Length: 224
Ligand SMILES: C[S@@+](CC[C@H](N)C(=O)[O-])C[C@H]1O[C@@H](n2cnc3c(N)ncnc32)[C@H](O)[C@@H]1O
Image (cartoon, rainbow, N blue to C red; front, top):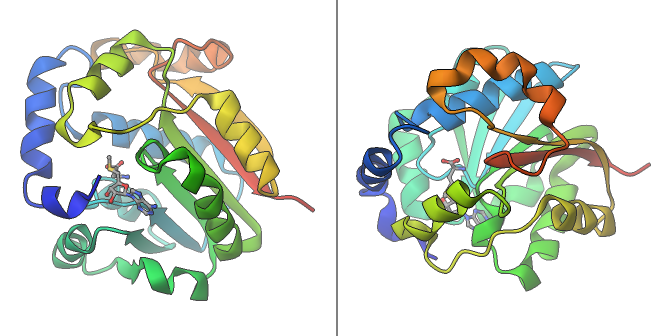
């Protein structure tokens, strides 16, 4: 899937999704805000340099700027049109073209909703590239859709820019990260409650083992 075609229409397509799944995601920033809040809770150190890998048009960037004011924020994507939107909207974010990525090093790589767009034979190569970009004690946090959740599967199957995407399970992502020299620190299923029940989020971590959450995350670092 080439996201260059969607850099102008991305927000409009999200709006259409929002209408259909209003109960679960009343606004486009619900999921992304949720993930940055979660990330803040699970990190023990304050990362100096944060890369949003596969940033798209930059949905997560305002939350990174707001929640990590002392960090330098970087964005990268294979879609150059999406990166142009990022440059236009977020002057404080440094945009890095995919080819330039391995020249840089980061303390935290955040990657959300990207791996299901990378075809399985290419996923290992992308992980090896991200490995090279991570500082020695750096962390990578990958968020993905949970293929065992029927609502997630329905959202993906009706989303125009998810055509051709292949969901990957939490256990497969962990295996792949392990093979590619990442040591998993923590992983959990997440996003169990729609926004109207978000007051219940404080009990979510009790269900992290349960493969019914809408998404999941894997937090990892380089193996010693
Ligand atoms: C569904 S969008 C997610 C965008 C953003 N992370 C978010 O949460 O809104 C998927 C993005 O992954 C990017 N992408 C797909 N394959 C990639 C790859 N191999 N390297 C970097 N970005 C990639 C696409 O260009 C697209 O912008």
